[in-house]
Length: 268
Length: 322
View: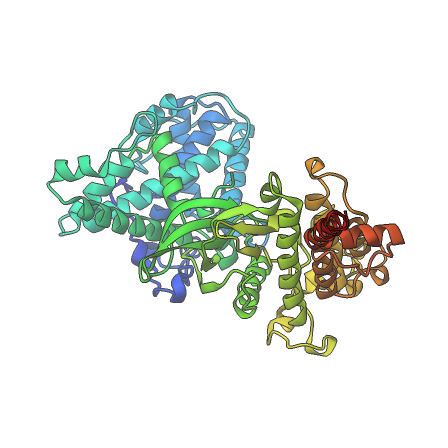
């Protein structure tokens, strides 16, 4: 059997169940207190747990990895796709993650350093990755991210690491949105997601969000219902982002630092 | 799922609005930033009123800052005085940051209020600031960051001393008056460590600026009060020359040597009151001419009435004698 791992990761909603490592609600609205993170689970002896953990890791990290390869390392799309696949394939064997020391750096920073090392090694060894040469690894929507990069300033060459962090946030939010959609689908809460989607997710011109009244008329709801649904969906979205974040960090301190950076208020 | 840049930015803004526990408070808008926290106007659904909500800023968040904000809330809650904002509630956000809820004050900061306000009115405001600070000192609390921007004059004339974030609470053994139970021991080690400087240049006493924390006491706040007095009551060129007794008051208050200052904010308030009442002040020894002038200014109306009466009476006698 090839050393490459054979599985498919569709970016369907909640591919990795965030409740895999359930945690109780915290008193006084504090941080979630998940005891076990994806980073730990990825080292587990049980292959099923390892696979699910890697699915979760990939769901958030494939965008920043691909964008980093395209932007910082200036690889062409085909090579970036292959390197992304190969990078995660090597990650599942634990080669990268085994060396992670949470006292030295955030996991996000560590993973980016691993990626740079991986690329440098590949270049040094003259490794040529052939498309389709191995098994189908991850089913990732590279066309989607190419469109996103082309739409923004993502294809401007940049040697900095900031793009990795920006895409990491996009990946995290996209995964949380998918979680929320999945949780609401085919339940009485579906209308709540629809309100959230129409108000918060739809692209708008000049930052002008639609009026609550407009959405209320479109959906045949009272305006108060729209605001209630939106408040609920936003609260759930926040919770899911924090859950995802918690599962992708190694220590409480790292989680707290990431959460405060992500959710902290902006200073004027 | 595609999330364009503007949607991503919008979602970050949504998440950055503090998520409060329960549904009692609803964040309305950000109304300011302090050294430690961001201030929001929020609506208290339970009591149907607007309140101010101070949340620990994320870029200073950490155990030390959280302890400081909590301590500030406790200090405010226990110092019940008209010059100190009452605290209603305290809690922790979903992301772990500490917040507290207090009365929403609408008004302007002292430096804005002082522009276009008579010197006498500014001095009356300063008198109330001194009384508030004196009250805090009596409870063992030293503010350590007094400055015009930390003094709010409300729309209805209320005067409030704000931002007690770096206040120092003396231990029971260190002071004579009543103390705030539990807060003395909660004072941060960093805040009281020698060499650590907390405060605002321009209003900071020399002993505070040099990090001589052991020498910081009520007179450190008196220095700041003197500096504020000079800044807000001495700046108005339209009010005419500054009276020497007033200059003497702020000079004494902001003496570089703590021993040369008023011993307490209450003593400073006492001298300010005497100045406002046109009485001799402790900080200034006046000459005979100045004393006569002051007495005349104080009893101006009565003196003029008496002199007018005597003049009319004299005229009447003269006319009658003719």
